[in-house]
Length: 292
Image: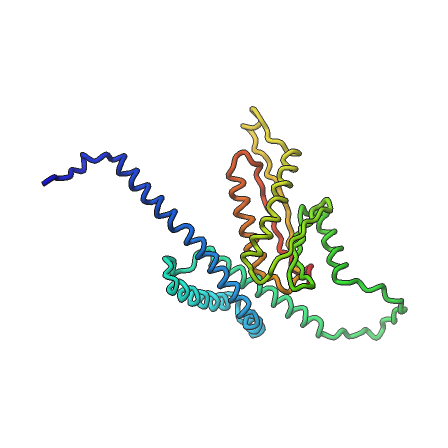
């Protein structure tokens, strides 16, 4: 009978075989994990629509955002566990990225409802005129400004300080439109189905990224990399790109903006990992108030 002695085995060969097994396992599981992560985001999107009115009532009743988040997390875990078991997926738990997305979504919705309640309360409070005040002379009212005019003015003011403004709005045919504007007045428009959150994020992402790459290249030419001794003694300055996101749409969910921001941040991380690229730092402002 042949006896295998460990010393007779090529250690390098064993290590290579083990490494290859790990790589094969990862290559097999990664596509499944990506699909599972997207499915979790879809289920969260459905939960956002189903529990939107419930969240409003919770905020009105005085429940904290942490208490509401616990309820949403438990429900998402229940929904995902049932789906994963039915599909026989090797990922029975929520991904950390999904939990982070859920927390951001709940907080955004919570803050939005709070702002609406505060605005309604301030409108209900009557103003008492002072007896000694003189009545002002009535002047003819100025021409009414449409919401579209007000938004355009706001965007133009913002573009004086920002590199881009991404504006979501509804269209007459039931679709939504993403309008990307830069400081030079150029615009890029994209229509999409707001009901499919992940597809919408992917389409808008493909529209935003080329603009970011172009802006980074333009700024890099104005701020070339230092060479020689100066490069060793100093660090290249980071290119600062500022983006504001306005949601003037009733159909675009808060999670669309959150998912889009996550995708852009991952792009920036990969971009900065390449030493040939000028470093980018994104200042992303979800400025929802101005679009109401």
